[in-house]
Length: 125
Image (cartoon, rainbow, N blue to C red; front, side):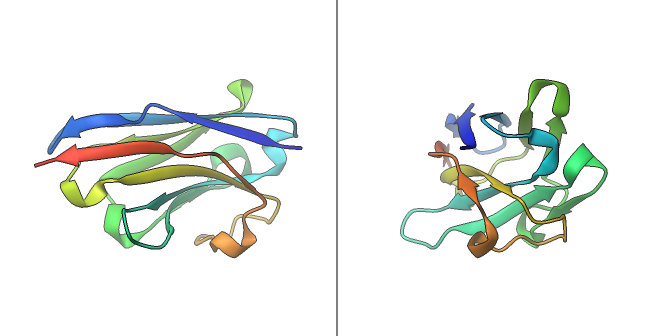
């Protein structure tokens, strides 16, 4: 059973940066497409970014292009989400996700095999 544990969330002000981490265990990390999702208060969970096995390709939701960066460190079995220039609309619970499917850009939450418990990000104006 794959386990995902997010960390790095917190309360920040608009314009600040945060780096989220997702530590994985219980599986062969390099065999999974990894992704970040977020769920703003009162809204559905939405795709943020994905990264291929080995980290050679990434894909971002239009809403975060140029603002967020996803990366992975296979030696540490960890993925990251660097979030810059945070805005109040970025406020959400952020979830790490793993999929056995090959990287194909956008990842539907339906195709996620494992979820982390989420880490909250609150951006004040």
